[in-house]
Amino acid sequence: MNNNHRSLVDGQFGEQAQAYLHSAVHAQGSDLERLASWLAAMPDARVLDMGCGAGHASFAAANVVASVVAYDLSDRMLAVVNEAAQARNLSNITTCQGMAEYLPFGDSEFDVVISRYSAHHWHDVGRALREAKRVLKPGGTLIVIDICSPGRPTLDVFLQTIEMLRDPSHVRDYTQGEWLTQVNEAGFTVHDLRNERLTLEFSSWVSRMNTPSELVEAIRLLQNKATDEVRRYFEVAADGSFASDRLMFMAQ
Image 1 (cartoon, rainbow, N blue to C red):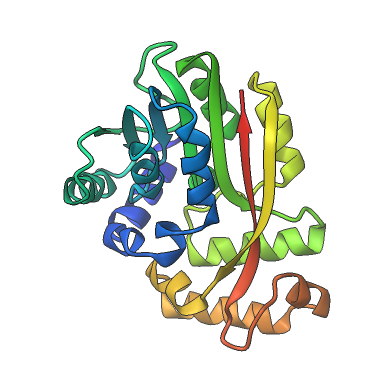
Image 2 (image 1 turned 180 degrees about the vertical axis):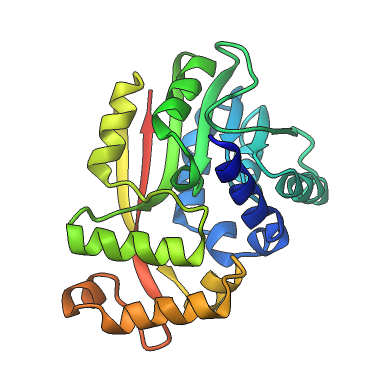
């Protein structure tokens, strides 16, 4: 990751750490329940949460596994994770700062690597996945949860554009096909994959990222000018709220 993108990501999310801790979209969901269910089968696991953000996936994991390393680029996010972990009496969570593409861990240190709503900010997903494979023990498990592009050009352009307007540190919401290709090229095999819809309430979606008012107006203009196909697919509501695709998979 170049320094400009690294600074952009850190700046965007560090200032909004508390907003992400209390975000309903991030703090709850069927994906967190499924994550805990999958991890419950591995109670002795040491888990790495890549791009942990405010720590919700780390908290879900820590309740059912032996230990969790919450890893993120933003030191302010990690401070929030530490404070929230103490409040939840989760003494098996430790934090570490760094980039997804350059993990400061030895080979085969973890049983499971998880990532939730982070990969669309990574500068080089392929490298990050290869790093995940390096730090996993042989036969280890990778679990990824992220917003997914529907792939069709008109839908993809719309999604990437509103994401970039909201948050300039956004890189790309990948399609399911792009995910499967990159995961396979990194040496993993996907053996459980789920697709779901995620509804995003507009005002909290933009306020969570502290999006400037002129860019909020640009997003609303784009929503209003979009084709009927785009508006139907993303279920754009009168207040700007909409639905995206969410992909969750487990690989080994």
